[in-house]
Image (cartoon, rainbow, N blue to C red):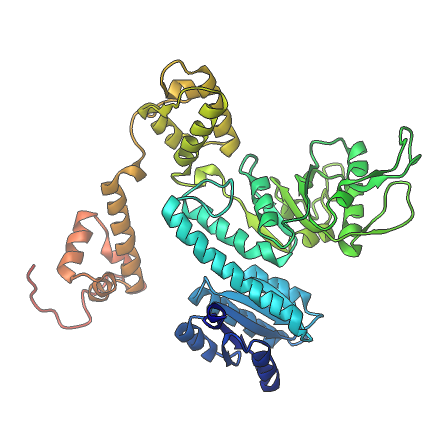
Length: 481
């Protein structure tokens, strides 16, 4: 119980009677209450709560809803690790989804049900505790938070944080990314971190199955529904009941099936081919594609045919959108992935433990990897099988040795670039005032002069109204280094 009392819950609710009722529900926690005003930010800063229960108000009051979402955005910016539960009226689904899109962990529909709300709040506390524990383990092991995901770049860390936020909510998620980036790994992580983890995860590739068979694969069929239907067969949707269905490459789904899938999403029922009885389903939908669906919506084909993807279906499957970055945008990850895969494949094929030759390291870092992780995996697989030496070379990988290490591995170059960027930003903020820019950078004016001269920065371009910048707001006095 002592561990429970130390948990901090901030309740932001304008209705004083409802605040008191919520305090009673969570009497065993360290509860702080306040209204949904700007003072809430001060409370978050002072109390550093683990969880915030935030009443967003009613969707029928757009001004209030907009202010609430803006305050939610500020809270999450101030304390990104705090778990926020958005509380709304039952008819405000769009408001709740918008809150999740901004970073809220979960949502709850009024009126209050003490038992259900308690489960939601305590689940948020549990997520926060797991994040703290996972962070500690990541610091110890250098591993990513999501199973199967390898990387140390900021892009992948941000992706993992997004998955951890969205997974428990039950929202329908559209995963976008180039081929080979690992979209199914993200989908499996969303399932594994959700309340459906103990239920089935069923994946189906819409591009790998002919259009004539995809419908029966998804919906199943009754005996005698068509020639060859010798027995009743359940489809993938039924097989995933209670769990998660992952529709990969949904952008390739034919228009006729898009309409049927939309009905399933709306009604949460399915009818087998040849059947007449709707079968209720409890499913979470995860979808993925390497196509830009927003561009396909509303775009007619070259022969005047209808748009290749339904607009209403697009908005149904994209309550939350997650973008998986290509490998070329994950600086440093290609080598880290290569080293892990190399060890795995050496064990798999019974080869001696192999390392990467210097030219292979340079080649991996310099290659743009248009096929992403899948291309890297295939090249390493072939190299491990075919390499004759004790290490894998650039030639074994079928790559060209660039001959020099990438600049981002050179600490001196990285430091110079950081100095230039910081100086330019400070000069821009100070509008060319060197004294103010030096103050922002935490250095003296002579040091700033030296930095400008050393990196050939034209300070006059940052002056007010495009003119040469003033050197100081105070009268000029001689200065000595």
